[in-house]
Amino acid sequence: MSPFIETIRIEDGRIHNLPYHNRRMDETRRSVLHQTGTLDLSDYIRPGNYRERTKCRVEYDKDILKVEYAAYHIRPVSSLRLVADDEAAYRYKSTDRSVLDRLFACRETEDDVLIVRKGLLTDTSICNIALWNGKQWITPSVPLLAGTKRASLLDQGGIVAGDIRPEDLPGYSRIRLFNAMIEFGEIDLPVDKIVL
Image (cartoon, rainbow, N blue to C red; front, side, top):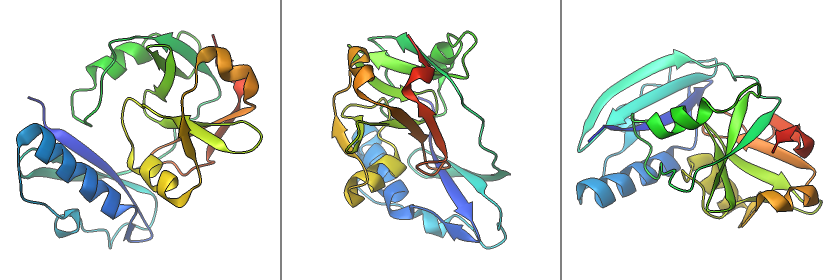
């Protein structure tokens, strides 16, 4: 079994969204590895020296295996290609990204893919999504990966969960891509940039 990972944003010497990362890590350890104890990432991460946006990558299984830091720069995304795969699965964030890498390779001339599973939109290869219907931001009810930023936005009421089918896209005007490293609103595209 491949190790699991948490990708955590550090900026201005502060760890972002830490309770959500701890919760997801402990849920993974409990569900997959049958661990009853908890770990606290703040015992392993040293954010003080990092002022610029920094990616902290924590690799773990039953215990923390590795903590790495790297400067982070947002990869520009200005177009998406719909790619369908009813078997795509990435419920637990792990070092094995083979399914995501395989789907990303299908992007052709677009910058990333928007993955459709069983007739419903899910995620891009690296981000959760939300679409604007003129009243609210809707995020897919069943993403490939339930991201930590997505969880915090749902808790705050900034987004709501719902089913979105490719044929529903004309009812939306914009799509936002976000994850632990990318703030909600930093990548915002017109829906017509999604290639069917």
